[in-house]
Image (cartoon, rainbow, N blue to C red; front, side, top):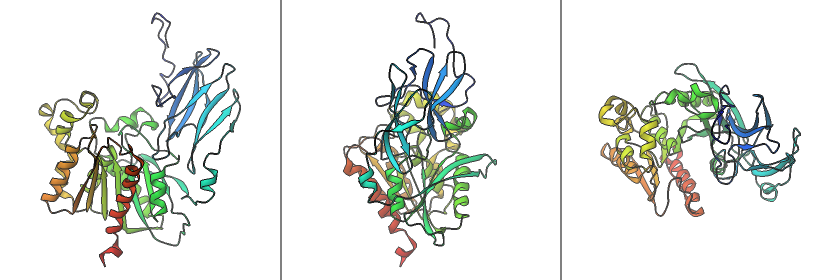
Length: 390
């Protein structure tokens, strides 16, 4: 904060080692003054969850809403909507692992009260997969890592289930225990779904987040592979039916995982980056990526670019791989997927490239296209199930 003339600048979060959302997103969520001027409300991401915190001018802080967010149904996110009345009453969206966002209100310092239950009729006729929180240690350095699984509806711990490892993009992002249509659809198809916050995820402090600075992808492989080991060790996952997927940065990690292990029966990489050199010169945010993600221009830092090249590790890939990208994706351009497709084809790997017309990054422009992501993924994994081998 600062005076109107820009003087007397004060940082209210200097000693607060968590990510504070820096701008309003899709209608609300950025820092806002409390109605009485006593401080500033900000949405804080902490260990996979979003909280609304009041940062007071005297340096103290208090959690105003312990769980806030989830304005979308299709994918775990921390997009939030909230506002305050002149009297300090809060209205905000509320997430949950078994429901999309609803609306609640709370008096200053009081508990929240739900105003809506928008999907009660629908969920009264559906059984969702149960979400379970997990913690394990990385096989790289013993760091604690955090994640979740969704179990299939009607889960029986005496049975053995196939597992899908699903990885977030960003890469400076995170997952949490909020509703996710895509993962619930995977669980409804009979899979245990594992999703995690490996090193580089943003809600665990600066040091953890910066472990991937100029080193992505890299040691996150060990965090993710250890996650699979941990869930397999719980006794209800069939180690012969492991699958892997992710979009954007998760597509990067998909290519990285299958370039470093052949434990997965099949993979689906949604709109990945494969060649960091071509990506720098073709993506829409080239300047940002070059300044913050890379140590500098590729011809000046050849070893760094090569060390995390997905083309380099494609030589190791044996996993049947489907790639799916929107033809109007300028964030991770189609040329990246084409390179990966051709690299795998040239090495005799079973590979399919799905081009989605009139779609940008995320493939969410049309409901039919968003649905096709999951039907395509489930079809590919089903094709490569052990029972499909005859």
